[in-house]
Length: 347
Ligand code: SAM
Image (cartoon, rainbow, N blue to C red):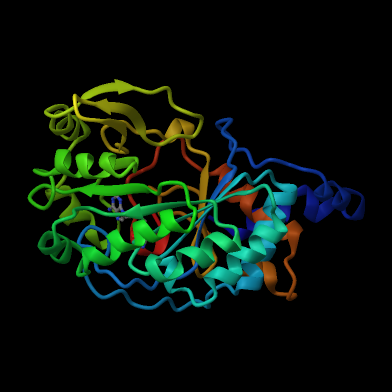
């Protein structure tokens, strides 16, 4: 994706009369008629876990400068006020390792009062941070938890599962709605215990979503070799639950079901980007910690937004132009050729 595409942008050539137009809302739309109003914003590429399916080895630091929080707030405020942004998900790396995350949330909330503001976290630091995150204005949490077995959790992620479980309780105590649990399914690691995990989650009022492992970045081969398709995931859950499909909301990536049996009922979801691609309803774009905009999770093409701050404050014309040019190339279906790792893309 080339920044020089912007030399043809009307904002760049028509001048001051048109610049007024940025004061109005121009939703970001792609050439397939999709409205792109969800942003996943990574605030760091650092992580305190080494999940086998995400980050199989050491992760070399980016050679690019990270965006500052001022730049992140600029970008979000602009997208919210002028480009129809409706939902922001903070991610990483591990977003709770970003030292100023609470302050960043408070600033975003201040700038964008009605924005739906969520975070995806591994939950390891939630016990100590949940209350501050909630007070700062964070609406919702997704917590990644692939197994509740301490030994399996350590093998898969290198971490201690008790900290995640403690973090989930702290989130409830802090007044968050029950976090959604994300579980990546891997053959030989957790695919024999999905119904147990569903039962554990439903007992606690958590919606759990099982994810097909995507072949992305350095973990691509590993994930292909451990891949468990949607049908096999469903079969496991159906061994213990009756599943009744729920209608899906616009932009929803998971197929959701009410799961019930004689003992209890709750909601589970399956996110199956390979068995059942949901690209047609995609509303997302991603910005990495170092300012790269990826229009599609499953496509390596990206542009850098860093140049938009060359004159200190955000050059909104250039940002609009770069974003529109990148989104114009968003494919209808991901190419499944993503060389950048999930730890940088943010999930
Ligand atoms: N550190 C945070 C966490 O663990 O939730 C946020 C970043 S993590 C990259 C975001 C989500 O992506 C997690 O739910 C993780 O399980 C998921 N993920 C990572 N690699 C994946 C893969 N190859 N396929 C599917 N999901 C993946």
